[in-house]
Image (cartoon, rainbow, N blue to C red; front, side, top):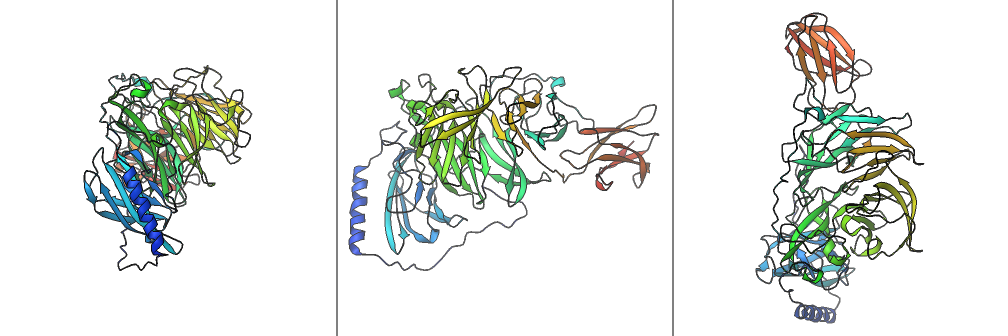
Length: 625
């Protein structure tokens, strides 16, 4: 759920009183009642262990209505704590919602409206039971009449996989980390910059290093490698996907944080900070899930789109796997930020067959489920389509956003388009539709290795001609990088192409024509799921930090301000006591931490951060000199 600090919580407004409904005719209702009864009689829960529907890729829109619902009708992978999402009509048009489970009976609950005014979720007062069939009835006003609806779904058996951290340990290498006298607890990774150019786009770099000897956490740094901001996280907590987004017309920092089990997905939450690095929001996945690390987008409509990975029990013997096996279902949810309600939920098991995977089910079990899809990017478009990327099918999918149905498969075993020379991707990540309609993708190429090295590509997909053409590709010149996982491609404002190389700890900026303009990497064993470049102004709410050391020639004062982007110079104040401080030295800002030599010993010192016009931006605490 999303919550804003120091803001009044939104309260649900309950609309009382009776609603007078004008029915079109008694004949219409009688026919609808007979149809619903027939559907119920024909439907039965599947045998234990089934996780895929009889018919794949059906529409989420209920016949005769404008309602797109989730869980998907006749699906078998719903959560025991699922909401029943009814999207596509005002909450006031939805009435008489009745929900019952084949084992748990009738469920009371509340119909809660979305803040966008286009639907509501029925939130049951108690969970459902695994394996039971849930039946939903209700009516929705369609034009001037009431239309009855009914649908069914089955609750999945959750697979309680082992979430213990990986057994491998990383040695604490002092030289892989930066160290600061004024902020000794930070210890971000060392950055090596190997290529620079005056032609690069403006902005700082945004990463979330992990898997190194130091703490994990979101990190911002300048083009020259100097740190801007680092937020170290507790041991066992990782971060991914740090980026700048817009919320309420203001730039914010967003990132995922949580734990990453060995099975290769995330279990955590999305964090939102303002430009003062104050936490102003958490976004949680709905329906009893934890948010996955792969994707998080804030939309102009006040919603957020995020990924979820959901391991469930499944009989996969038809594919050569065990009858008592498990499958990792890939989901995405659209969350109403003001209410935390799930507006939309899409699951891979309902739309893409297990046989489309390039992963093997034969060794899958309940500890290592068959991760057949592995959703890693979601790009919703204003034209009513959504582009997905799935690593383990080596395919991208264009969906009808409202119905959830796959319209076009790009690549993989059942591609709807012909892949021209060089256009095929393998185990790719981060597919995005560009303003001109082309698609940027990070093409990993393995593991197992399909291409000699990873690359960023731009593709032109012609749905009418059913072709997929390679327009541009960007390879790391030296060393050749083969990223087995992760990675992203970002098209910058000036047309440059910025690439984060994922499991390979590099990040590069190319001109549109392919010239390498900038290249850097994290030292040692670190990696970052994605790396971006954005313009950013940080103004921390905390004061600058200070430390001092004494030498025979006078003290040296160390000044830093974690996250600040405005400081041009530092001024040292000194005096006989904390109440009598005057300027004694100054120096231009020199990276994250600036060392300022003080001519003579001072009993007490403090530092002031100065802007480009000499204005005081912040003052540190006073310490003994």
